[in-house]
Image 1: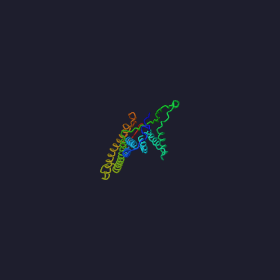
Image 2 (image 1 turned 120 degrees about the vertical axis):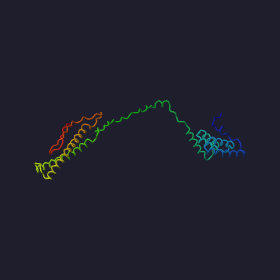
Image 3 (image 1 turned 90 degrees about the horizontal axis):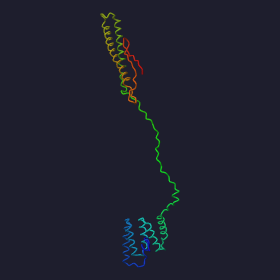
Image 4 (image 1 turned 90 degrees about the vertical axis):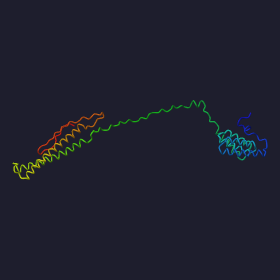
Amino acid sequence: MALAGDPAIEYPECNRTATPADLEGAKGAHKAATQFYERADYDRAIQYWKDAYQLDCTAHGVLINIANAYEKKGDRAEAVTALETYLARTPDASDAQTFRDKIQNLKNSIRPAPTPTAGESASAPVLPPPVATASAVPSRTVEPPPPQPPYGYAPWIATGAGVVTLLVGGILTSSGFADISGAEESCPTRIDCEPDVADLGNQGRTQATVGGVLLGLGAAGIAGGLIWEFGFNQPRTPSGLLAPAATLRVTPVAGPGTAGVGVSGRF
């Protein structure tokens, strides 16, 4: 009983002579098969070439075309059958060895890979799946930013302005008292004094008065700036509390020929 893929079924033996009509039909079938092959429609190309071979069973070269179509289709077993049929029917062909090599290559490509034996499977070690480990990342302590005073440098600016005012007031006061002393030396009785001497005395009193006012303002500015800085402008600790305030005592000092402030305290 013949099996599928057997040349006796696929490509029967040639036992007749083709008529002119058969030859014309074979040419038409070959032409159609070539067009389908070029379009990659390998199933229809194979069918038309088989029809052409049945019409003209002496055109054994058609078997090569059928083998190529089967190989393009991926059916290497049928390609081997077609080539073996070609060699069986044209044993003296000049390209016989070329196709013998091709048949062997096709058979090697369809030969199944050997399956491992039970002993080989048992002896193969089974590796455990890799366990993902968390890489140690060195911890880094983030240093908190240094505490900042809430009012910045504003208290020191106020203190500096007070110092400047105090110095100006001290200069005016000293100059004014010097003019007053000069006028008193020139006119001790302060009666019927020369106009220049009187003007000098009056100018001294004005300067002394203005200087005294500036001394007071300057001292107040210094005292206020220092109290603002050490009493209300302390940096806040991380807990949100104010840093301990420094103890400060400010005493303005002003008098004839003397101007300044007395500062005492604990920092």
